[in-house]
Length: 491
Image 1 (cartoon, rainbow, N blue to C red):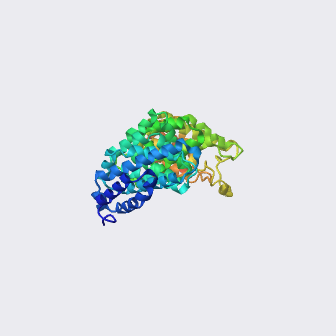
Image 2 (spheres, rainbow, N blue to C red; image 1 turned 30 degrees about the horizontal axis):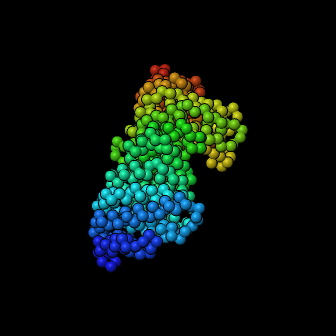
Image 3 (cartoon, rainbow, N blue to C red; image 1 turned 90 degrees about the vertical axis):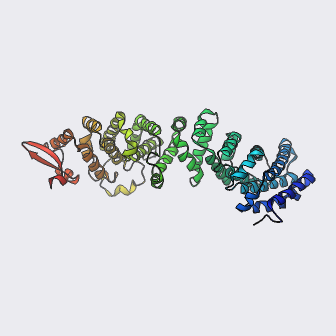
């Protein structure tokens, strides 16, 4: 398909001649229709390939003239709305729409646009648009949205374009558009930001006074607009790969903001489709970030005991501990990639200590940590601490998997009888007995000392044989001594 009225170069020559002969006041009326026709033509790959650098020189000239006009208006805004500037905005939107189409999967045109210097006036115009008042919202929105789409298409698959856009748009344009009231403008800004970001630029956010502010703004968008995929991808695919950035934000944030980022990390970890597509060496969350989160859990773990109070009010600090535990359970379940978390004695100690404290709190008064086999479970199904003790036992098992040192530490800290005391059915901790089976089997695997502890508990009547049977274990006496064996080996 050729451009309406002839070839693309011919159409551009026509526009160029009209621009040269027109005055500012009638520029819009004479070039609007040809530019709209060219925008439609650029939807076709063949027509995009016909474009030469002269095409974009014309647009650079037009947008430079419109930029000058917008600057005059913003400097004399007391004059109120002016029809001339309304049509000026319409022309800007059409130019951006045409340039947006010209960039689609066309490296040649992306290069021409950089060469003629179109990025700088585009960014300047977008910056000035937010200062305009009294215009039709649809006109302003179209200019904003098409301008951002143009920058996004210009950046896709082109590192040189990304670099120029970043130098011109970071941080002010991104911040202004991310805080825009129009949802589509925010969406397209997130698209441009995601396309431009890489590991180096993400790390650079730490070195700029407004860099962390920009990162925080994106995270807050994830809370306000959870269906906005671009913001989610910026956090999970870029920010999480920079542990220093996440820790810097986390440290200065309030509890509510910390919960947001922890939930985004959980979502990233639970994305099984993405994990299956990743390479064997890829980590959903970097080592240093997980070590930081483990340290946060160790530091603040006692906050969860606020749920043991008589009131059922949700506490944000307590919820943070729960979210951190969820993340630790998820990561340590992937032993191949996250086994380094087993090298933290403090994490093992904290988990045992917290299981003891919550178990004790549940016995001292009736609360969410109290074992329950009543019909009242329905009242607790939405309580954030439901399953908390089961998750602690799950984490203990993960930390001890194929790790003799941690098996020993759990025994020395009295963790084995504590786990056995939590293996009954508990409405407040669904599947706790299954996780107890899991943990005890791991703790006794190739560990005679831990088996001996359980044997003595049976001999003294502290541990019930029925409980061990449910775990697939059996106690046998040989030469006056008790031994723990797997039922599978006994058969």
